[in-house]
Length: 213
Ligand SMILES: C[S@@+](CC[C@H](N)C(=O)[O-])C[C@H]1O[C@@H](n2cnc3c(N)ncnc32)[C@H](O)[C@@H]1O
Image (cartoon, rainbow, N blue to C red; front, side, top):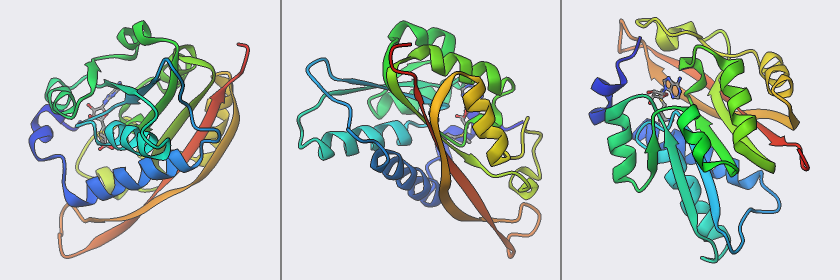
């Protein structure tokens, strides 16, 4: 298992920042119309780590709306050290999806590279559905299946997801309009031999809570 409290101080490497910001921009580009309005927008960043995804997404949304939008980002992460850094980036932070329900209904849930660390994926997706307002959006970026090298030195619950299986899981959680696309292609040094690099792929899934739910 990764010890995310230990990892937090050195988490924001250039490759992770590049990946996470690219994913935030792609998530934003898939939303039409953009959320916003007099009450502002609430975004949940699930498995927020240091808060880069949520804060980048929020900044992009405000820019895309010409500054005419206030965005609150709630970061969900069990790691206290990750939450501390996300808080420094301006996120409100909680340690679980159960606690995040106090912010329901939320407009958007974003998540990058977190679901493969979650034991109960179906339960987490059901909690996301419960958290969203009717018509709200869920975006999940995570590793494609078959990339065991990514966590070769670790014991993670899941090595990656089959795209069709993840679509089914989103639909089983009561979400609709599911899409799944290429999200990011990166390169990661081999754990045992840093002269070797492995290419890895990340998918980006989107889904919406049924309007009128
Ligand atoms: C690989 S990091 C990704 C962090 C960040 N989203 C990013 O893209 O850089 C995975 C994060 O998921 C968090 N995590 C692990 N189990 C979780 C759970 N059950 N619910 C929410 N987050 C979880 C970890 O603490 C960690 O911060």
